[in-house]
Image (tube, rainbow, N blue to C red; front, side):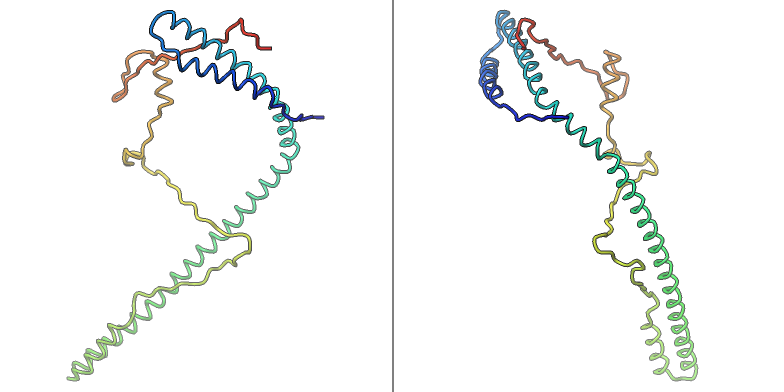
Length: 234
């Protein structure tokens, strides 16, 4: 059985003062000669030692918690996995059906629109024919009236059918827009991301001059320190 004990904060509070003193010493140390340089190195090793000591203390508290959390996650993982799969299956089915229905609805809309447009143009055509006949008979006013009626006929018909799927309480659709690149050769440069991770890996391997246009390899020094072997960590 996993036991998670109450956290004793006494030691953590006590060590805080010691760490604050170390930080104050580090801030006040100005390296201007070899003695100060050596002192800085010694203090750095002390810092690394204290970090290691605190890491051991911290893990003595967090490890049982991590083990308990993992045990709880493992206990419910099969059930959670089954429910996640069920959710995905249902969502995919719902989206597929709704998409097919929406596609059918739009096709029906377009069919009705074309039918109404055909009727409207036929009506417009008949009015124009009557106008031409009236004009041929010398009935100018009647011809003008018929042409005006023909112009008023709406041939650009907008047809909107109601949604074919019923709205469900507690379940709704959310549109997520995303980009799909179909030709990366014409994508503007401002949308390109430089792969610094790959370039840094190459620079570390070559350790010299770059032959990549627009890129130079530079070396930066970092300090690597080990804990003071004489420091008591127990």
